[in-house]
Length: 117
Image (tube, rainbow, N blue to C red; front, side, top):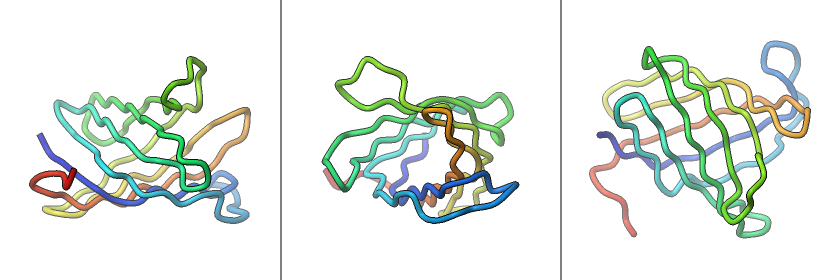
């Protein structure tokens, strides 16, 4: 099991076409990778809403899953990301589709031994 903290960036537009502008930047307070399953948590800075991201991979490179606003029964977003990693730093890059809009998602992660909280 690997533990991470980091930042999540979302940009308007598909990175394979055109990126328009920064949509949002948020701090990931905890991310856990175990058996090719990522579970991440962050809080939206503009309204303190907690978000959970769950991603799965068959090959350890291509991860797919979804995001969910905590306390909301609805579907928030579909996520497809590629995972690149070295000994302490990692990055996930790909698409985040929400309400019919395609965003580019970049998640920068730093491995930690334990979480602060």
